[in-house]
Image 1 (cartoon, rainbow, N blue to C red):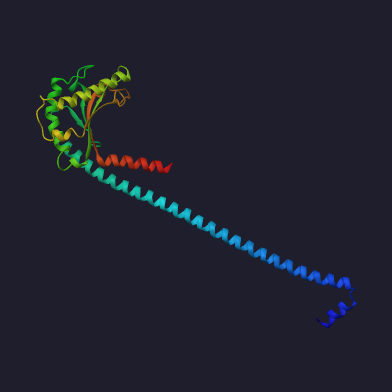
Image 2: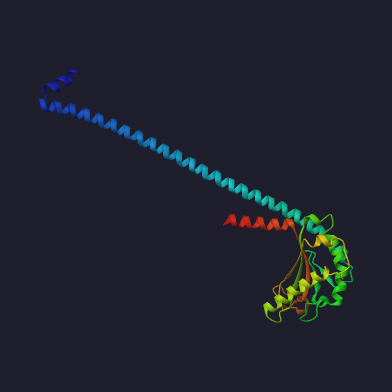
Length: 259
C-alpha cells in the first residue's frame, strides 16, 4: 500500500475504512459479473446468428433445388414439344399427300391433322345409320388413313385414333349428344363389320380407335359469325400421339407445383 493511501487510511475512522474496502470489492465483483453476462449474451447471439444463417442457407438451397427441378421440367417439356411437333408434322404431311387430290369429300387440317367429312356424306337427317355413300367413302378412306397412322414409321407414336361426331345446334344438347355419339359409333362399327373389305392393320386398329360424340359443343361458324349448320354436321377423324399425353401430364404437374 502506498504511503499516501496509508496516510489517508490513517485518518479515516474505523467504520469508513471497512466501508471503502467493501465498496472496491463489490465494484470488482459487479464488473466481473457484467463481463460474464456480456460474454454469455455474445455467445447466445453468435449461436442464434449461426443457426439463422444455417436455416437461411438451407431454405435457399431448397429453393434452388425446386427451381432447378422446374427448369429441368421445362427443358424436358420443350424437348418433348419439338419431338411431338416433328412426328406430327411428318404424319400431317403424309396425310396431305395422300388425300390432296382425292375425290373423297374431306378436308385435312394442316395444323392438327384432323380429317373432316361433312355430315351429309355419312348420315341422313336425325339418322345414325351410315348411308351407302358413307360406306363407299369409308372403304376408300380407311385403308389409306390407317395405312399411314399404323405404318412402321408411326405406329409406335400413335396413342389414339378418334372418330368424333358433331351436330348442328338444332334440338337440345342431350339429344344431339346421343345423336353424335351414335353416329361416331356407327362409323366404327361399319369399319369392323364383316361386310367391310379387309385392310392392313385392322387388328392393330382395335387397340387405339375410339368413338366420341361432341353434340353441338364445337360448331363451325360462317364469316358473319353465325353457325354454319351444314358444316357443323360432320364426322372427324383425329389422332393423338403418346408424347402428347405425356405433355399433358407434365403440364398438369407443373401447374400443380406452381400453386
